[in-house]
Amino acid sequence: MTFSNMNESSPDLPLEVLGLFRIIFKSASKHFEDIEKSVGITGAQLWALSEVAEAPGITVSNLAKKMSLHQSTTSNMVDKMEAKGLVARIRSDEDRRVVMVRPTQTGLSILNSAPGPFKGILPDALMRMQEQDLRGIRDHLVNLVSMLEYKSDQAASEPLGTAINLKS
Picture 1 (cartoon, rainbow, N blue to C red):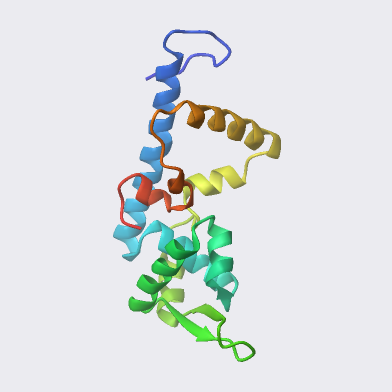
Picture 2 (picture 1 turned 135 degrees about the vertical axis):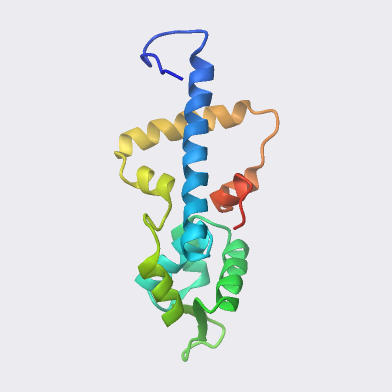
């Protein structure tokens, strides 16, 4: 597929844009598959593990914010990571209601052998973009989403792998 000059008006333009979405999601899907084959955990778990390793003792709610995920989604992911021995939960000495997460040696070993970027290729690319470009993309995507006859608003706070039919 060739992509024409984006300033041209063309009846094929919607299909070209669709092709770009396909490239983005297929590339993200391939990266997730490579991570799982390489280290045996999902892309979302790898991102979470990297955030925990960067800030040992992070709370689940702060981890959810860092990953732009719903807190219950993040809590369930931490449960799975804990069951695999990647992280450990610790209760705060000051407030026993507060639960913090820290990486285990197993988790750190996996992180050290995992392919990057840990956040995933799409979040990594977005984080390297200029703010004004991101605002433009956001505004256009808000418009596109408003035109969808069916939309899943809760998908905004789920791992991308879930949205493209991969395990989270």
